Image (cartoon, rainbow, N blue to C red; front, side, top):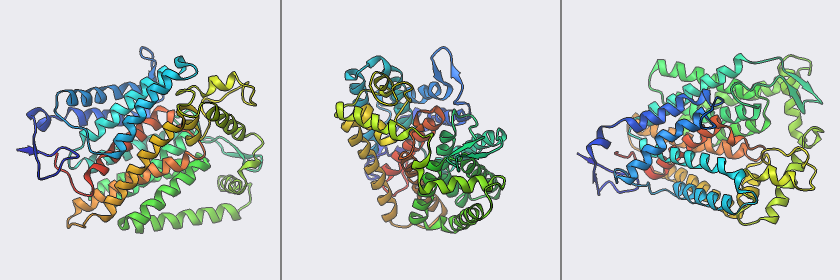
Length: 433
């Protein structure tokens, strides 16, 4: 019996240790992290981390042990290269940053999340693109349900620039919930289309509906744009999802038209319409300090251009500056690009671009792969493209906010990055592990 490791050619099989062939410990450990996502807001007192961050240590340790024992090899992946070099740059940036003490916790979490992403790639076996992603969507539906249960009364203030009663659920603020739901929506659509059974279709459809509802009621404009970006990406790249996405698009257009026509005093739809109108001129929000925060981030980036001020160093540097946000500095610059630029410099941004390039190459490989008969290859392709679409949603939302440090969002994103490594390494072919 032979095994082909990711990144090697099918014509050059490598003998697999019996432990790797028969063991299911690593996939179960990854599944355990996914199951714990709804509890990511709970902190473990002993280690000072969230439940999700602490749980990532188990699959990360298993993945590193497999590499140390030569039971696995690093996948041939540009995404993995960008992430690993980014981790090294993160450590260097922390060491030479303005205040290394502020960066220690984020560096430790970065080590855990990177190890977990590698574990997701190593844990993949044929069939897990079905069961693994279905589990992720179902857990996402549970998170959305938790948020919906805690829904309050939505009210628009300042012409919709501020909305009270927004959903948060297990998250600390609505934008985190919005990004979580927006990222999972393309995956949910692909899973519904390729489920293969009525029971799974019903369960996944319910989870998708919960995710969509929670995304809307989060009133996060950035997550709306991210969700539309991810769904549009999937519709363009994967024909099998277009019928479902056309129905989703009609529902979205109908809802927007109703929200824009009805009076602003109409419950829910009136608030939604007020919020949508603010997209035309988002700078009119008198309570939004983001322009000032972005200016401070740019100032820090220009003073520390190459390696930045260090991971997590933005608020400390802002507090010691003469900027307009020094009295109450935020945790991050509320923009993904500016956060990386300020805290990790041009080098960090360049390595992030390598990851994006790897995702684009993975998409190209899936689009130009020779079509093969059977439902399994079609499901693999649709779900592979959905993973990239989910990351596109995260990137689009990152232009408006930076909720990636929430442990639930972080756990989801690193699960998707690990899956994206598998997608890129497959190069459009179904691997044999």
